[in-house]
Length: 465
Image 1 (cartoon, one colour):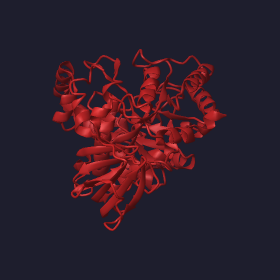
Image 2 (cartoon, helix red, strand yellow):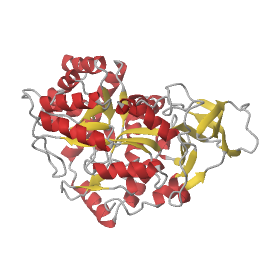
Image 3 (spheres, helix red, strand yellow):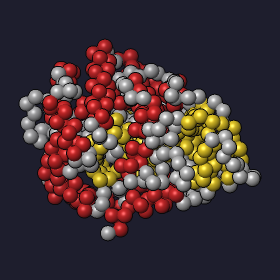
């Protein structure tokens, strides 16, 4: 029965003060008893219009006051004048991983337990749900070490994975035998501390049904990157969340066979009409069944703008591999990539307009162009490029995820009484969305971490650990 109250327990644990250990101390920039952030623009994550000239008071890990310039500043408070800066809630990343492709087309993924938690936190991600794990026990131990203050990183919700059928593209995934096997998988990892489960591309409807029933019996949730099971079938079964959105839905491919994963090609995707009845009925089903969708637009970019900070994270071998991959990326691949991003963001706008809950995450996989943390920021930029306002995109990346996780009373938006999970940005993402990348300090549970120092600590590590 205790698992039924897991979201509440996790929220209570996260709100407790964590000691700052010698390993974490070098990255701490602000750790005063009381902190005042003054003259700052606030985007609170609720969808409300930004407020200029605000004062935020932080004490005991919480936001104790929020208001205009007349807000009293407690005696002895450490004051930070943030004129020219914007504060947003800590990002709630809903499709994160601690692994990254090994490169050169080899379908093996390397666990990045050291570098990725730091990259997420440096980029403003204060809460992260892994979107499936290949070393789940490692993920659970990383969460434990972060919770104990031994390592820097976001608060983590660990998804076990993958619930996959025969046909997996990597040997690191278990292939289920049947529905009984799916239930046993859920039972085992729930017992080890996983808080959700990931159905994958070749799972059958019967296996998905067994997994959903087993997870729901424990008060836990199931998400999915599906193909063999259509979105409408998954909604009817009771899945809680769907990753990536319409562009991976096998149900959009003409002639799809039951429990078989068809290829979603440029031709089939081009023929999909977002305002057509097939897509609109899918949206109605998802909204009616309260199925959330996670936006991961950044992972579908074949060759996004190349940034020095991205290259700086990679090992020398990883850097060479990545640059060679970009050179090999042909015009057809770039065109298909652009089509997938365009179609998906159109779907996401229609889904939100119909009342659907849209989440966001990085998914640092694909061809390696999506980097932990950086891709969370890029996803916000792509949402804005696709027609969402900056305020809407920030809400998708913050409060919406907290609502899905059941921790929105504690975090996900900026309000008095909530945990002080905040991101200080230089500039204003409302007028220039790329300012979402200009992270200076990340407050997690009232402690301010130096983004630049966290990034410096992982230079040359991605591709190694």
